[in-house]
Length: 249
Image (cartoon, rainbow, N blue to C red):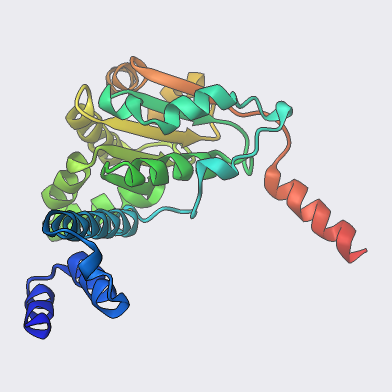
């Protein structure tokens, strides 16, 4: 009977229950449980397994640049990072409120890592997240217009609870890029959140986007409900490189 039950669990893809029930059988502990306790144990195991698989799937789909964690952030005083603010962001209430986070600072200072860490945290809490390098995203959308898959790509972006745009403003925006950005921002405004990282100070974004009317509309929607992190200090990559050179010496 147990073999048949295990086989049915496998076919129904109740993998959490399957693992828990097999473990109980092998340990001989099933008699230690009342019927209610055994059912509760099996249901809890199945719930946990499905939650874990969902998180793993969301992390794969997000395509983060870094495997990052809030616990590993560097809070050196010269970086201008408020630990309390980061802990509040880690609760992801900004997503529930459809707010944005704008992270600026020089190259190599850890903007992408912080964005990825917050994205990982959001996935762990059950939110859907998508990470994109900004230039690559809009290059992909131009190709999508050519092959007819543009609306599918836009719809995928719109479905995400959190969109991360990394390295925003590295290249000036042309007409098609402005149009696509406006569409994405309009779809998400008041409905979902974004994290944007950029080497370019926010007061220069208007010039990067170009075309005053469109830039005004985009920035009004991005900045209106946004938290700002302005990172300072020396490049972390440069510091790490200097440490490596010292060790080699």
